Amino acid sequence: MSPTGAEVIRKIRSQVEEVDPSEVREHLGNGVVLVDVRESEEWDAGHIPGAKHVPRGYLESRIEGAVADRDQRVVVYCASGQRSALAANTLREQLGYENVASMNGGITLWKDRGYDVDVPKSLTKEQRERYSRHLLVPEIGLPGQTKLLEAKVLLLGAGGLGSPTALYLAAAGVGTLGIVDDDEVDLSNLQRQVIHTTDRIGVPKVDSAEESIRAINPDVDVKKYPVRLDASNIMEIIQGYDVIVDGVDNFPTRYLLNDATVRLDIPVVSASILGFDGQLSVFAPHDGPCYRCLYPVPPPAELAPSCGANGVLGVLPGTMGLLQATEVIKLITGAGEPLIGRLLLYEALGATFTELKVRRDPECPICSKDPSEISDDEMGVFPDYEAFCAAAG
Ligand SMILES: [Zn+2]
Image (cartoon, rainbow, N blue to C red):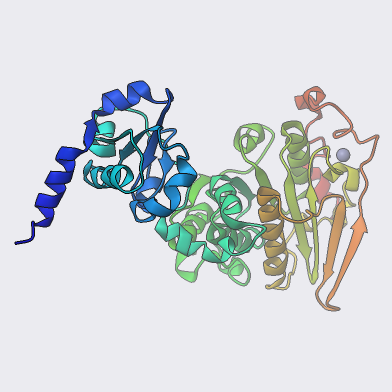
């Protein structure tokens, strides 16, 4: 009668040298090669630092790549010590490795003892599926997706521009999305602010946006700032973000934002819209011009769109917001040529895109200075806003 599987395993284990995790830990790095024979998912969930990964199914074909010298001391481990015993037996009996042991209790016992485990940066099975179309793009791939998941992006405004930007950045897997908006959802917003819904009229925009983002992608951590950005809170709010998406609709905040981001060296992807026209640029402090280099003085008050309600084609913030989202992803992943030092103009009625070069102003009151020299007094210097709009009549 043939022996049962359990009997075979017992027999093999009795013939294989087994070592305790404490002994393995003590000799790690001292001429001992540690080989993990578990499956890839198990390895990805965490392994012993310094171990080499050779799944048991590939032992015969890959062990020489991991351990070339057959006299080398090799310790094999798995989850509990059973698969590693079988692998150690194969290594000794069939592959000629003379000095092989199996770690008793596997990584389970190792962890129980509180010893170190390396958890590599990798995607879960669900993330690999969710982001599979990114993983197929060479410019993004796993390194790019990992950067996106670790990135912190701050959106100024959950309005027309912020809505599409937030939705697509959430879908793309940007790990942290901060949203600054002190407004509530209004019926007149819904013609373009697609992150909000009719049943959320009257709800704070940050809460409404959070609900939509969570529904799209639970990977995203939403940080809410239901405040108006001003000189008293801007440094505290924007600190620590990798990229800022500017969808604010007033010049004083734009100037303040510019000065604060130049001081903290945070790139800003900026867009503005009016009627059928959109503008877009990326202001990367010291790599290119800043907002003040482009607009050294604010426009005449009567031309400032923020002073009252202005008409805008509902889809236009969608177009411009998605161009912003694209620039954000490029900045995070390092793919392509970001729109630094270039101003993109979109005119929807004529369906034309025009690109203008924007140069750094060597006399710029903000970005020509050493960031540490920009004082609080100099930040956001701008005519009084109420007076500025009142002048518009
Ligand atoms: Zn400048």
